[in-house]
Image (cartoon, rainbow, N blue to C red; front, side, top):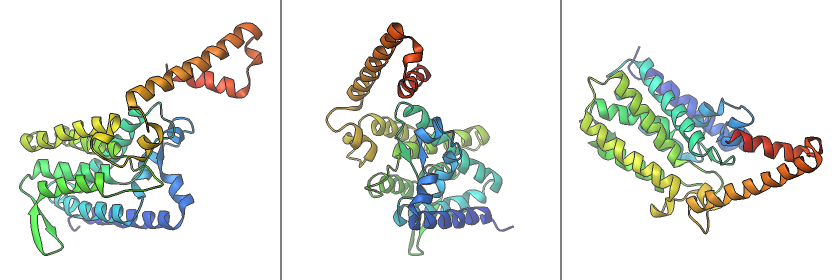
Length: 276
């Protein structure tokens, strides 16, 4: 079998499903990773399906072009099933980390294969730090320079007025893939290259989650929730408001019994208990 064949099939499947999402918003909305859909409605398939849809052609083309070069190169270094393992573990790992980071934000969402692609990219660089990327047949550049450009384009050039792309989710996916690569190929890893990718990613994730305005990143989720205060203040305000509502419900139970609660009040109490 030709090296990289499974990567090419993966690219074709992703391109087809993304195209379907561009044409049919209802289909796209059913694939997006959303905290509420995963936590409350048990739509666990979205942890994976969100990587097969994109906000626009630019995000799709950037991801698939990058996946082709780094994925096919990695397929020549390790077994192709392991390339797929790194890809899907990066995709799922990024979303699971986001599920924890945004566990109090039911409306948080993310889509795109950036995390899975970055996981493959970082693994390829950790195993082959001297690899180069062909730029449309015109010239070749070092893989690490391409990786920097990829991350910057993902953060600053890929935007959507309607959907939250979830940059921290994608960077978390890259970290997940790199961690798996360390476990699988620790004797072959270039640790200097790994550290050069690992540390900036952790810093970027922290800033994107807490203070994206420092990086001047377009973050729909943050803009919708934290227009006038930083994320720490807003979280304390949200928690205080929830606690106040629960206190009112508990007083009602004490005065009239639990049978007096409405369906909405029961749901609020259950949600509060699950977050303790």
